[in-house]
Image (spheres, rainbow, N blue to C red):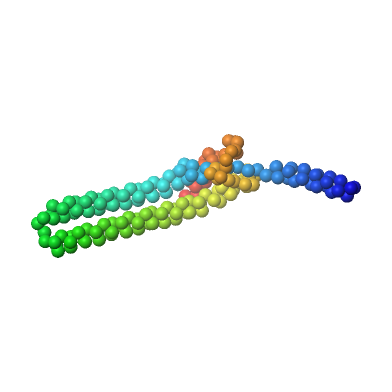
Length: 173
């Protein structure tokens, strides 16, 4: 009986001390999307990606309109052309449509590759700055706001990090 009491007291005090040790860790959270969107460098990256995407959309819409015009032309010639020539033009239209779909898929893959490359480059530039900020402010753990259910707003350091990164990226360039 004495041994269980002693064991109980030892474990009780051990758990009490464990909570104090964990309470000293400083935790903060940030909104990485907001950081990227509000950084001067991030705005430039997102603008380039958006411009490239808009140019691709314009090209695709123009090709789609050309194919629609071609389809209308085939419909108008339907009664005039021989069946063999009509089938030939219809098959050509189907091949053009398939080419357009393939081109669209390639553009999407290309945009995604460029976006990932640019964002990875951005994260490589800002990672040391964030790490430095964490060291200066004695922050042990930094979480993304997407993984936080509830948190005090004073633990959100997004705006401070945006200012810090913008200042340091200007000095790097």
